[in-house]
Length: 412
Image (cartoon, rainbow, N blue to C red; front, top):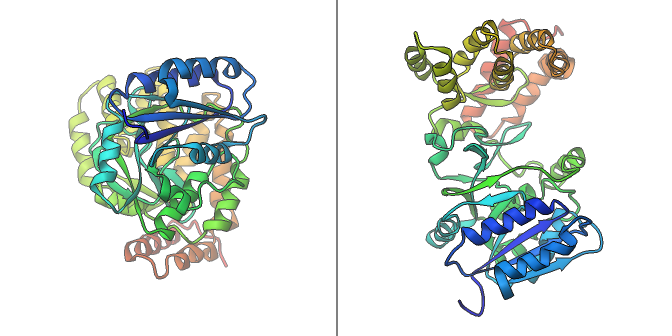
């Protein structure tokens, strides 16, 4: 082991001792042979973290463990920045404590940075327990920022493809220490959210580097288990818009095209993806005459199969499996987001005494409100595509014609 480690693993924590304990044990168990140190920044934890963390860290990592303890919760960004400043290695790996490392997770990440000097940062494939995707990169539309291919099976071809991205989550992010500080580190006015998007946009557009998810590396992410994780969502979003608005470009449709899907604009003027008609037809043929269990499994393997979900909902309800029918309806709304599907969902959820029925009534109201369905709103989104890519502009032009034909526009 060299005097200076190759990688500094920086883990911010605030309570959640059991998660931190399991994370550190998995790190020790699945990083054999690597030259690394562990820097934990404790945001004033008041649970067993305060007494148990240092003894466990020393037992697992010896002198390669360092603990920074703050008297109060400084939030994610400041804690990570303090950990990065204390780190000795040329590479930083930011890691949430609600994660579990898997065998062989580190070498593919380091190798990717070594092989491609254009990369400013890389992340592993983050998986939910159960082997579906939690994160393989962040995708952008004109109105939304979202995890790309969330809930896809881990072995789906679109998931296994390496891709260049505009942003990655800092729940598990490897990058050179110099790049991190040249980009300005984490902007500390965010409150436990969007710091990573801001950082990545600085790396991508100010420094000129690329970012990539490396699917050969996998980490299980339990996702947002910290208390109050979403409390600053609105303020964080507004801050990101002020600092970075106009920096990122819509790319969800571009990822979709490369992966063999068909992009379209939903009734709420967002960019969504669907299967091509020929691929839907092939799945329909495969499902023909098969039992419910087979068709449900087929739908799970193909998360964009909207037609299959639409048929499964009624069949599951008839079979008395309302719970799975409700889940497929939630997925169908997310896939299509049309006024017609939202109306059906609201009625369906009300039948099953689901609280989410009111959410779909609210979505319906929004879709038909002046800010969403009148001509000026549609034209606004069309203007936002001006000077961007031709495909995006055509998608919005097609949507305007479709909504006019369906008479969803307000008059005037």
